[in-house]
Length: 114
Length: 111
Image (cartoon, rainbow over all chains, first blue to last red; front, top):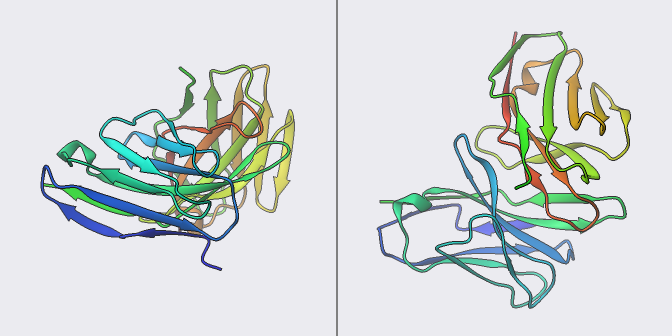
């Protein structure tokens, strides 16, 4: 049982290049999220998807696009990478509980933009 | 803007001591409260959730919630070096709602 799988784990990009971070889950959860984590800034939500085919902006969506083509997969795309997008990116899924949320995180993707 | 504030830290305690981590939140309508632990270079993992006022104990961990004062805390008894990590507080308005995370506090347990 892999849980939440992110690829790639490490990536170096040049400014202006594009790339897609892939996320797949085998937990049958409806909701999926992309966060970025920067030193001193905590976890900030980029985009989320409450269900297959739907996506919504989070706190810091600029410079990113997402795609939720099926229940398992939620990808994050950087169309034209900038050094400010150097960060650790976490994909997460949510178990829909009666009293709140339990978030399960992938192992993270370390992205450096030079 | 919903905010979750944690002490800036870092926090250093000797092995065997009680570590007290605090968190305040701005949204009075918040219903669900979580503590995540994150080891360096790893992803966050859920260690405690609390939904009602009072204390909730799980092994060496106790979460305390006071909705009137809008704070939630995490106590770690008999702290171990393996508890050294960053602890993230997260708050949600309720079921099926997005979490807001604090910036985290780094705990160091000295042998």
